[in-house]
Amino acid sequence: MLISVKSALLFVMASYSRCGAISASRGPNRRVGSRRWPRKSACYRCCMSVQNCVMEQGGMVRRADGAAPTWAGEVASTERRGENDWQSVDRALRTIARRRAGLDAEEARWLREAEALQIWEELGMVSMSDYLERVLMYAPRTAQERMRVARALGTLPRLAEALGGGELSFSAVRELTRVAIPSNEQAWIAAAQGKNLREVEELVADHRPGDGPEDPKDPAARRHVVRLELSAETFALLRQARQVLDDEHGTGLSEDQLVAALCGAVLDGDGAAADAGGRAKFQISLTVCERCNQGWQHGAGAQIAIGADAVDRACCDAQHIGSIDGEAPERAYQDVSPSVRRFVWHRDGGRCRVPGCRSSRGLEVHHIVHRADDGGHDASNVCLLCSSCHQAHHAGTLMIRGTATELEVRRPA
Image (cartoon, rainbow, N blue to C red; front, top):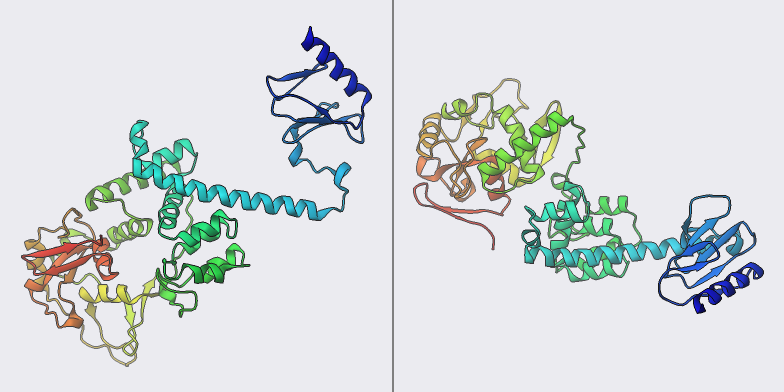
């Protein structure tokens, strides 16, 4: 009886109070008249029009005309604010942006914890990516990027703090983690202040990890974005090809390594037969300046600037055609003779020599002691590496020492 009396009393007050607030106690859903309201509501108000009934403080808007209910915090309340009160709208949206950045920072912290605990195993899932796709509903590429950023923020506390405080958005932080290191992260944060995402992307472009925002830009460091739309059949083939290449290399390839391996399989021509024949892998695909050693790779009529590490890698297994400024061609030659190359190919079994990598595709000759360090071209100083491992070595992420018979390979700790 007490509940009935209270409900009736509330109904009477609501019917006679057009703009008055009615408090409701916590507990189960309360019924006012014929309407049921969520228990988290704190007050009800009917304003300006008897057709609009707004439940404030996170409640829902219900209209007598049958329109779909919406959250009161999202309603453009011209009745309360005035149609020209743009500052309120701006403040609300900026608050949402700060809250979203804070959630992204919190998510990154928990993602690191989840990876450390290998949480997917406890839930019967196959990987961290599988967990993110199922629990957070991320697409595979998005899941990969979220984990990359989360790991980076674990070593970049100032950048993580800037994200958590809403000073920078997740999109901006994502770009900065490509180049920032602990010693210069504050400089990157300062340089990104007041810039939109496109401006931050341009700020980061042409810089390598460890560079500062004031360091000279290197066109060869630019990452080129390629977007593909594939049919279901082609997408399935791509996934199968990735699985084969991942298994061969003993690790998951990056998108760059995957595309390089696929392109290399096409450009190799006869593949193993050509490698065993002793012909240099890089013949006329590069142009290198004799003065500054800047290299350009030829791609279907376009010349793309490449970095010094890519030039060094190509020179390990190149055929030199001489200057192209003269009137007549020079005699072509290759540093590693065809006979030595054939011997090395058979000695190494036609596969990459890096332990754990079983790739037999895209093989290249590598000088263990670099040519710049007076390394010779004889078989004892030459071994086979796949394109991914060869590039990783010249980029400084894979250490290779010793001799061809006693090869020492180390990865950074």
